[in-house]
Image (cartoon, rainbow, N blue to C red; front, side):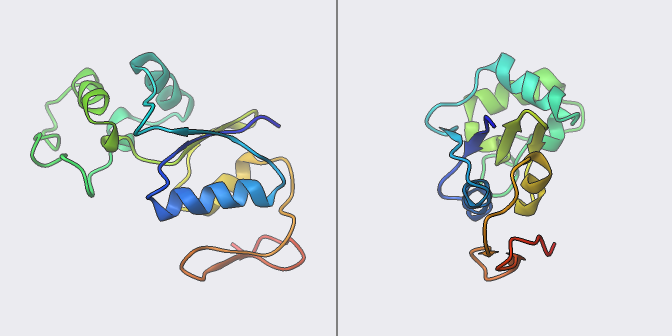
Length: 140
């Protein structure tokens, strides 16, 4: 199974999603999107494949969202994409792409519906929340 994750290693949710993918025995293609942001066309395609609005993929916390006035409901999708291209930190993460679909994996266990391989063992998120038991059964 080919899996791609648009990843920010500084984000706990993104790290948890990466760990869940690996717990299924899959080594994904990792795109650190702050270093290598997707092109505008790729980002637009990912958003369409997630069946989300552009605004729903816009990250507010820890970004220049407020200072750029991105809360303005009059801004078009193109305006929002322009901002995300100029400031990739505005792209919410992690976005995971598999043959089963594309999803913004928040919370991290959302990735499980995109993986055809079962979890191979216990998994707890960084905060200690147990998601998979020792037998590989998903608890959440």
